[in-house]
Length: 289
Image 1 (cartoon, rainbow, N blue to C red):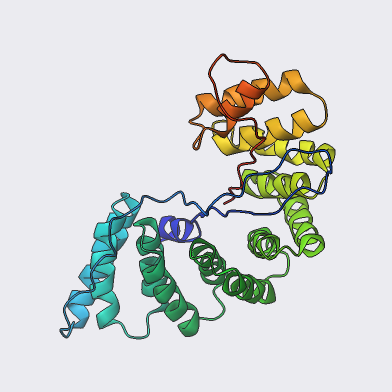
Image 2 (cartoon, rainbow, N blue to C red; image 1 turned 135 degrees about the vertical axis):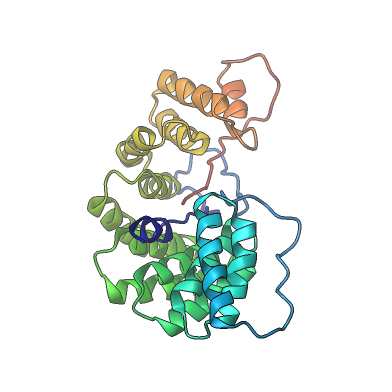
């Protein structure tokens, strides 16, 4: 069960940001849609037929669901855990894992419902509120994400993950000073978390402080060296502080890592580092876990 507990504490989502830089001489920033790291599914996983589930079936379905989840078969896990949940009306843990399985299968709406049921049954579960905030970010429900993050902080005011989700929600609501405060505190509490460092650095760029963004984005690069949007954001920070050579290296690293959306490639084109034609914008990758 220790392994399961560690798995249940996980879960990531990405957030978009439409802030604009306060630098009057900076090129326009590109507003990006919300993205997610989990696999996209063509349609939600169907709920099981309405039938009674006895304790033995619920227990075996729970065990199957946990095994499938740990093996990365999130869709299969969700199907088994839904059966288990029908036979365990008051089991918060079953609904919590079901929520994560649905989310990782691409069904954010279903995940939200399961996680709401979980935290209703067990309002003291810190990770339940944190992951509910992540799912609500994925659903573009920033106010709901903020409420969930604040609930998590009532349980543990020193939770870097909860502060991160609070900062993301505030950032999306363009409450810049509050967002910076939350993200700085989160980064100070857990400086090795690359996702927190990336979000903090991103917001510093977007609020016209690219020089201040370099340190957290370098920390994000150390933690997440092969994540394209981290390398792209660091490239933007370097470029805006006149460190063009280093910016080119980061943009190239972002291209090598996948460069979703072609943002880093466009920056390389603009800086004359490639002969491929492209646009002339500096595009920040507004992703965050």
